[in-house]
Amino acid sequence: VAAALQRPEPLDTAPGVALLLAESKLDGSPLGTMRIQTNRHRPLGMEGTIDLPTWMQGKGLAEATRLGITQDKVGRVVKTVLFKAYYHYCLLNDIRYMVITARSPIDRQYERLLFQDVYPGMGYVPLQHVFNLPHRIMYLEVFNVEDLWKSMDHPLSDYMFHTHHPDLYLV
Image 1 (spheres, helix red, strand yellow):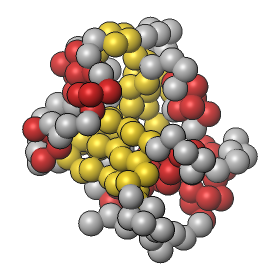
Image 2: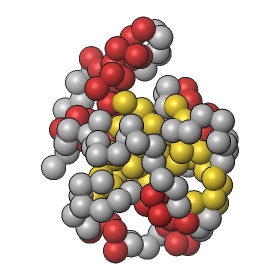
Image 3: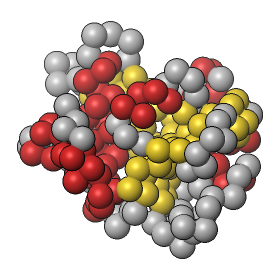
Image 4: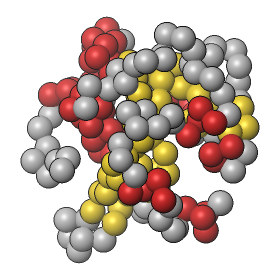
């Protein structure tokens, strides 16, 4: 799996796909990446395995995949910045639901970000687009997340919604 993630895929340059890159300000080295695919031009990768519920159909969706983070100390911060960029990308592109697939134990990180299961109780599903590895399918509603996080007194709320980052930009 790791070797396959080191090479670009045809989807990387397809319409409706954005690649995020976090670079070191010190030396320009890559610290993390994320691919975002919307459902504007084609179904999401997970839809090759599972039908999404009717309440999601016809809505703007963006699936984050190929998350890769450096293993050094800044990895946690980089992941948070990439998530913030994913959220801003969704706002800019009128995306209603951020959708992810996550293996254990990474799924717990998304639970802490208040992602919910698309199908509660379904558990882990082997997904074709990610080497048939079992993943949870989770979502976060973009336009309600700020209110949700504030109501839950989420520790990242101020950072996500009130901290300006001049180095965070989407082109």
